[in-house]
Length: 411
Image 1 (cartoon, rainbow, N blue to C red):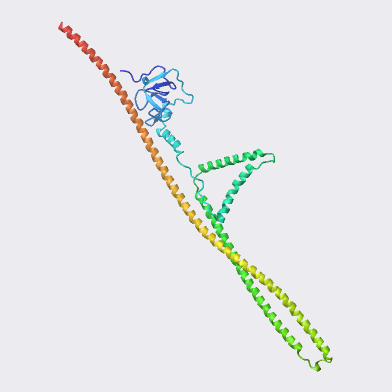
Image 2: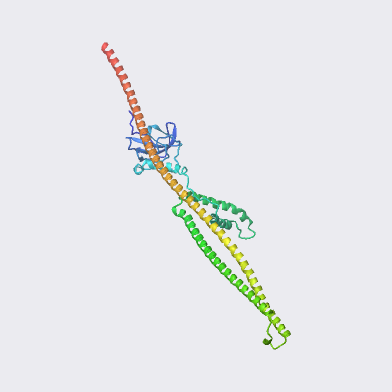
């Protein structure tokens, strides 16, 4: 019966060997904790192995999953021309014992799952056709336009080549920005509060504008009432002056007594006519001036009416903006709710992924143990078969000896 602890002479770590038709390099030679005797750990070139250098939570060497296999030394056939790669080095069994088997599998799963989980977009913003949204978009696009302008503007008139290269640099900047947005974390509550703060500021500004417009309208109405009162007073004064003129004219045409004047009647009549002319000329000038003032006041009144109409239009626009603001707030709340739901679903998917990884690691460990049990059973069956063959040979020899003894006794 062959000794399990024996090995072919010259087998060592780093040699090129062949195991059941598969080529690989020797990574470990020595005792193991899962079975007695000497074992040889081989890293196969193809994924036809049974483990990743880890058996029962103990790491014996480093290799990729399903590339490692443990065999007895007689099963490893040495290839003389094989040379081990420079990057792979054997690891001592004592230091490798502290590494669990789940580390390698988890690292491989995490490396593979990084490409499966999509990145969160940096920003979840919707544009609405309103003045505030347009101004916010213009503010947001100004830094990008400045950056593109600084990249595309040449330093001198003769630098036309730089202008041609500028679009490529802009594409590179966009690519870097896109990568940053992919690697960025989900937006926090501070980023969501910025639109609310902007809406509050705009609401306050609108309220101030409305108050100012109301004050201006009140002042204009007061001024109009005062002007109307002044116009009425002036008209009353004009009427009084006209009545006085009529009375004076009537008094001028009345006959004068002879005792009142010592002169002739012709001289007295000439003096009365001159006095009437002087008295009549002065009120006409005032009347014309009052007409001019009235026209000016009428023009001012029309201007004030136009201003009042403009104020009413501004008031209607402010009411429309308030309606738009309520709609924007409703949309913002919906977006916040969607963001919370997406965060919750992301957490659930992460927990499910971790549970799946744990199950996968447990399955891998159990599979490694079953494979080792299978190998040990196969080896034991081979040993028993070998013993059976030896016993059969001994039985045959004993039968031959028995026949010889029987023949001798018969003689």
